[in-house]
Every structure is written in structure tokens, then in C-alpha cells.
Length: 431
Image (cartoon, rainbow, N blue to C red; front, side, top):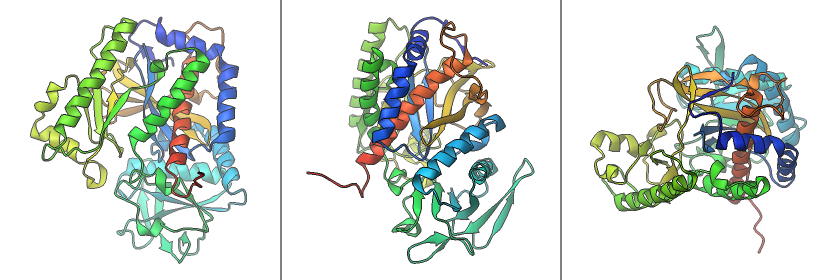
């Protein structure tokens, strides 16, 4: 399935696709050298937008849910990558404890946990699910729509270790982004591997830091390919002191929105793009598509009604928004059955293992698709036998298109590894 692009299948994206295919040996060597120096995040997913004239990551998640959207054909790749990842960290690993999000009644999310359990079980580990939700006081089985079920067990903390009754894991995998803060039960664990590390959580992490790292990576990669890095990089600004509830920080927001729209206009003019520029204002931390709005003109901010302000002021787990990133809006000109779509690429260790399209029939090309009503269509990464096919006309081959998505997603993963190194509280500082 080749994604249907509204824009004609000629022009910049095909040029970019062609350039990536022609440079494949150089690109793969570049990644190989990066991973010799840096550690990839344990797992990640990247939301990508394809505007037909540029292709850019707009979000990088280091605690990806949604593994249940990967098709059975993608599982062998995920299992192999899980083996590689675990082998690197703890080759003698036997028991793995997965800590999920606290919303225990979301069966769609719990199906994702079952899929993770399946992947690591097939990678040769005993896997159990330990909840840090205070409501889970005894082992609780939750039945899922597909006939499966998941057993949630209360986590037990000893002085230096975390486990379950009769279960002592050497590795703990967080699938909880800790938006509400880092609970004491997860701190000061010295004898077990905690993946990802606590400083990857949204209580510490900032999107502006990530895109700062990504900008550097895009410049270097652009040089390698001989392209303008803007073609793969969403420009951004940041505002550190806003409060939508009482209208504080409005001036900082308006000034930064205006400045960024001006920069985008100049780029559009340079490339002869006849689209209306827009920016996306979102909470600088957090996920689940909350605390996000599309702005086409700084004047729109003055007209924000109370409902929009309330929607922007609070994100997941009731956290108040005080910092925002203003990101260049990247249109999506991809369609699945006439509904707007965007690719989401899943990675484990340094490998692309699969992905899907997030599709939303009720959203526009310049809107956030990570919202209620979204559906998911598997990407053709599922055809694991389909390697890129150099020499085939750009836009005509699904594997070629997906190779390009995989490259951009891996660039975001490299950026995440730089970002985690820069924010590691235990890193050795050299003068």
C-alpha cells in the first residue's frame, strides 16, 4: 500500500526519496558510526508529517504505547530487536517487570501492554506486569475485547529493589511516562536496570530540548545528503512562562508565534509553496495529544475563548501547562481512504520494527490527529521481505517511501539519545 499523496507525486518529496535511496550506503554508515558513540533509547515512536514538500518528525515518544497496532508480521522484527536491546544491557536477564500507566480501565492501552509482554516473552524473558497504581492492592485480572486478559499485580519495594510477590526482576521496563512526577517507589534503585531512565520521563523531559538536538542532527545529515536541513526539520520557538488560565505570558507567546510564522513565510517563498503557514502551540512536556492548538495568525491568540484556554491549560494527569513549544506546522498531504493520515514509526534499540498510519476522518491537514476518533492502519513495514528497491520510480514503491520514513524516524531517535545524554543527572562532567 503506497500512501496516497494529494500533492502530485513529483517534486521535493520524490527528490528527497531518490536522494536517500542513492545515498543508502552513506546513510547506513552514518547511523552505524552514531551508534558506536551514543546509546539509542530503549524504545521509541516518532510521529512524522509528510507535506509533499517537506518531511519532518513532529513528536518523539520514549514510552510508546500502541504496540498493539503492530501487525503479527512485524513481531519477529520486534522480538529480534528486543533481544538485541536486552543483550546489550543485561545478557543474563531472566525476569522482566513491566510497569504500565495507571489508567487501568483503558482496554486499548492494556492491549498494548499484552503485546509488549508477548514480544519480551518471545525474546526469552519471564514477563509480569507490576502496577504502581495505589488502587491495585491485589493481583487484578482485566479482560480485554479480543478475548485476552492482563494480570496487574501490586509492585513491592524493598530497600534497593522493586518486584512482585515471588518475582525478583533484574530489569524493569517503564511503559509509564510519569507525567505527574516521579514516584518515590521508582527512585534510588541501584541493583536493577530501569528502562528508560527516569530523566526520559515527561516530568523531566522537554520537547524544546529534543528539537534543539534534532536541529543539530538535521544540519549534519543535510550536509551528508547535500540538502537544505529545513526539508526534514520543523523550526520552533519556546516560551517558558505561560498560564492559559489567567492569561499570563500572552505577549511572549504572540511575539514568538509571529516571529516563527515570518520565518516559515520566507521559506515558503524561497520554495514557491502556495500554502498558508501555521504553527502548532503545545505543552513543552507531556503526551496523548493534549494541550495542543493550531495557530495561523498571532491575532488568533487574543481571541482564544475560555474553552480553548481551559483545553490548553491542563494536560495528562491534571498537570498545569507553564511552558510551551511553538513548532512550525507541517501539513499532512497523506490520505487513507480520503481521510487525513500521518505515519507513526516504532523503534526498539536502534532498529525500525514497524509502524502504522494514524488516520482521522474529522481532522484537517493542519490539525493534530492524535485525538479521540483516530483509527490506525498498519504501515507496509509489515512486508518484512520488502527491502528498499533502488532504481524504481520515486513514489511508486511502498518500501522506498517507508525507507524514507524510517530514516527520518531514526534521526529523531539519534536526537533523543543526544538529549538523554545532555540531561543525564549521573553523567560524568569533564572540565
